[in-house]
Image 1 (tube, helix red, strand yellow):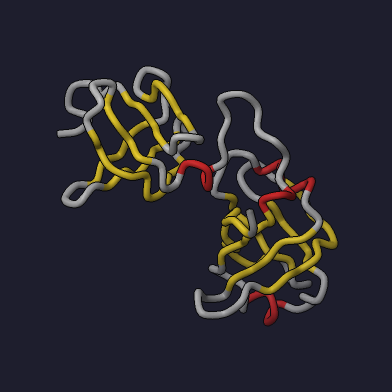
Image 2 (cartoon, helix red, strand yellow):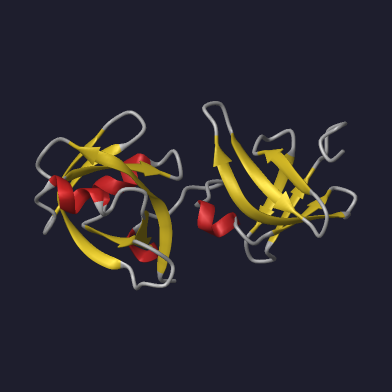
Length: 169
């Protein structure tokens, strides 16, 4: 599958070149199984590969020491950059669990088969994840909760939602 977005380098940590990585999902522990990451400074450049020398997982982020990054100046160059991982390095998901990259691009329909739009991105909130669904003229924020999201079908690239009153207005 290739490289997929995992998170962002939010800031530097300490004086030895460590960086803090904020993941795009609640599965921060996936980083403990990954031996390398790729950092993309901008869309025009090829992502740079780094081996992870050490990591400490915290509540919502990880502090990571990358091989070759030994100074604050070198770490500052990575601040704000996107962190990518090889999709094959991620563990398999459990039933009814999905990675964000699997959901982006799926078409969203109501239970009455009305097209709502396409998943463009996701937002992680403390209490829930929101799908950002866009069509030609509107953007909808759809909570990823069982009362609304009724079906996710990766093979058909389709999500079926039950739109509670006011959700799509």
